[in-house]
Image 1: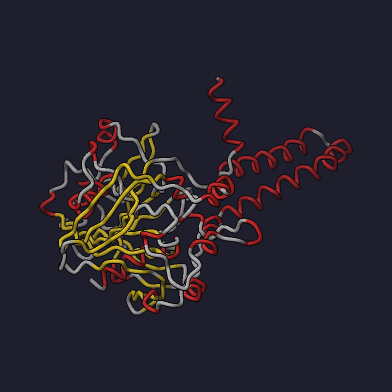
Image 2: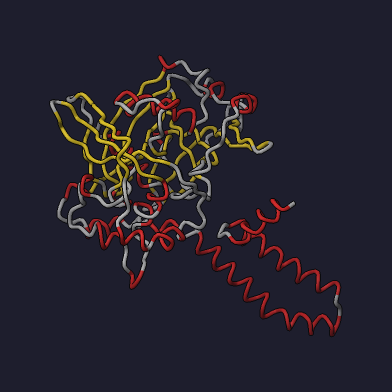
Length: 422
């Protein structure tokens, strides 16, 4: 009982949408109940006394709920024009992505485009740990508070310190940081502190973006991969509303950070540029690796660069071809019993709500923030006994093409830019 009370206390202390929705529902229910229990003059007197408190509380929660939907835009600017004006010294930062006759401009700095001319190498220093700058330490609680609507927990992360050509090899130097460092640096870069001051104004003020080795941000390695089935069918996940960024937006098929190797393995070139993608097919797309024939999987490392929207955060981009058609795809998915047997813990950070099986040749921009595409089926995530598992919506049926319009993550479009320029 005590645990439930404590849990309720932290629920009402939180800034989550569920809390405000629940409180608003309670206010409405109380008002309706009073109208039945206290008729006539007594009701009028009571309701006039309560109305100031209830209405003000109700409106306050509505306002907080509405502002919560703007959380992503408050902490990270998606204004490409503004950022191009800040980082104006290098014209190559401006990238144009074309989708079936429509196009939009983005800002991005490519560090390395993989054309196969260099052998890839990784030098990992697990004993080197990133430390926050003093100004960020002093503002930690304020910067952390902007993520009130996001599900988050602290974990070690793999930081990219630099990329250099060494002894004929393209070498990636990595170290360690943690997820909270990420939340108060890269993922809060445009949150206004005192007198409209942003971290971008202090550390990444332009006109050039600082190179990785000079960055004061956490800079863990992001992983983005476009995953295709036969027939140019692209798997497109849509984030849940409690993600730390891109809430309710579609992303690359795999959009995550570089996780650590299973069973404490070594972070080397094979892991970074191949095995981590295979692992992510399981952790992000819920494909059962025991059912997957890896000889039917092709992983193409496209390149790595700095996401300027998030202050130069490093992103590695991939394209993956699964030699399976749409009829075979459902057979690859983990089922409830498999997940239960493996006792797999569902990740709580940046979860997806569904995955669309989309036609690449139908994708179009309809605004700076939204795209449109047709999909032929979808995977939804169902929950049973606190275990979340994937389920095809129309298994065994031929689904008519449906059209959807949705917001998208900027890094998703940079994944396309790499793919179209490989």
